[in-house]
Length: 307
Length: 217
Image (cartoon, rainbow over all chains, first blue to last red):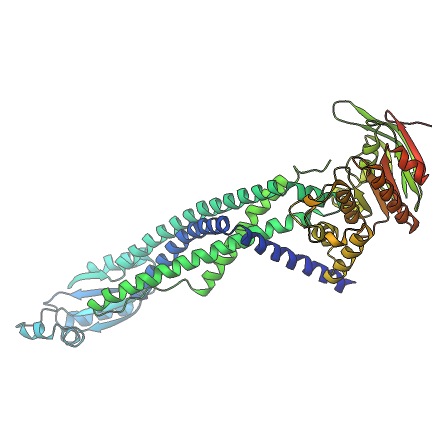
């Protein structure tokens, strides 16, 4: 009995789904336009989101550990270095630090960049001794406070927060994420409105069929089901379109970027939407379509009462 | 099977379609509800199928008080009935076969069993050869028979027909009468609202005469 009921249930849903695809194929141009509009509406926030994610990945790489660089005065001697080393050791807010002597710094520059010739041509070493400090607390305010304190120490010429610009980027990204959220909300509303209206039109054109179905014993859920499926399928198709638009855009941009980054001897590649976010996009678009259809059906179906 | 007690139906605006109606139709009975147009025949049928609700009194079908049913229970009440409408209420965007299929789809019938039943119903009303055609190409009598096929395909316990012979010539009407008789003979309760006296004379059913919304004794 339960097996039979489940079979009927499954059969009804499969039939409905088939009917929905049939209906989409029945008016291909209208369906394509609807799906296209939904796809573009979703591609905008999805594209922005991918762009932000790329920027964020970029900034993370650069600011994995914010550090403070302490540059000593050029006339600092070994005793000064030892004194500062002692103070850093005892400082409660310093997690660890590394000493880079001026000789070592010069050697690093010689090895790592193409500036060897320039370095050699210099008469004397222009670089100061330096300490690279990792703080215990990486919050921007704590880092800035620490930096301000270091600057006041004797023989410290300059203290620089390496991650300052990365943090500025991070807060700009935060703003960007908020903008994406607003955009998503607005366009989600648009998607719901589109589905609401297409569903309303369908209900109106099928008014007679709905009336007859009600008269011969169709339950509300039976009548509602094809409309909800239609909304969900249309929304999902829109989500797939949005994904394709974003994927294609990134693909084209990456082609352009390859040329550009070759000129700079680096390798910049934009990343595609990760699988988890892709799945979220599909589920979200299907849900929005379903929800728009549900609102429409709830509002309009009760208006059809057979007499 | 169907029992009315003290049923009144007043439409919005004050028109009183039925006044203090009481009767009982037993299972397996064939009953005609007769009277002139406007006597309240259609309203009576609508009350049975929960298309309308009584203003007062009670309508009981299969032990269920129709007036007190929750909206969610109404579809299941209607599945007891085969409804035959005066205006047929066919779907003109699908063929004859799919029109008859509709009640079985609603009930979630297995496809193979459903096809078998649809063919049997169409055969019963002699429309099997036209299963692929569209209702618009059928004559008035054929459309009425298609409506009957749709009403019987799920083998309902009760057949309700509203003016089934209206707009039909008398030969067709006679055919239809025989059809209803054959359903009744296999145990289906048949309730027909009609002002067709020829049909009544031929089938000699029990009659429930209405006059201006009241039972005419």
